[in-house]
Image (cartoon, rainbow, N blue to C red; front, side):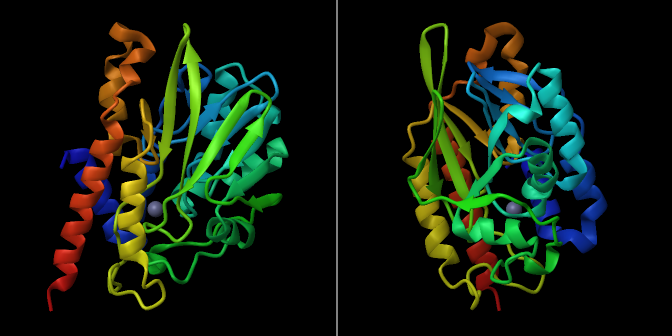
Length: 288
Ligand SMILES: [Zn+2]
C-alpha cells in the first residue's frame, strides 16, 4: 500500500477521538479545482473528492467534503466559472461526515435536490449517524439536509443531456453508492466512474465482520467490490482521491492533457486494493 493510503487508513482506523485534528487537516487540505474530462471537473479538497458534472441545463455535484470544506467547494465551482445556483442535483457517495457534512450548506445555497440511497438519505435528512455503522463511535452528527430523495439501485438521474446512474455499493456504510456517467472531449467519449469507499473499517472496539447491527457488511462489501470491478471504467475518481492515484494521474496532465486521467484498469486496481483491505481486516478480526 502507498504511504498516502496508509495515512488515510490510519486516520480512518484511528477514529475521530484519536486523530480528529489530523483527519480534518487532511480532509480540508487546499486543492485548486481542475478539469478531469469534458464536462467533468474536480472541485474537492486535496483529501476528499467532489466532482462537478456540468451542462447548459444545470449541473450535478457529487459530494461536498466535510462541513468545514463547503466554502472551498463553492469557491472552486465559482473559480471554474460555474454558478452554485445552477446545481440541480447533489449526489452522495456515502453518508459519513467527511464526504457529506457540507451537503446541507451547498444545498441551501443551490436549492438542489439531494439524492442518495435510502440508507444514505436517512442520515442526511436527520443528520444523525447510522447506528448500524461499524464506525458509529467515531461519527459525529451533521447539519440536517433539506430536499432529499432516495434513489433506487440502477436509477438514472437525468438532467438535460446528463444521465448519471446510481450503483449501490454498500459495505463501508449501509448507504454507500457509486455513480457513473459519460463525458466527451474532442469527439472521444469516456465512461466516468465516481467509486465510493469500499474499505472494511470498524471503530475501536467494534468489528466490521461481526457486527450484529449490520451482519451483511462483509457480504455487501464483497458484492460491492465486484460491482465496481465490473463497471465500464475509463476515468475513475474515488471518494478519497488518493485511493485511486488521482494525484499521480494529475501530475501527467500538463504533458498529456485530460487523457492523463484515463486508466482503463483503474476500477480493477481499486477493487483489488479493497479486496486486500478486506482480507487484512478479516484476519485482524479473527484474532482472539
Ligand atoms: Zn467513510
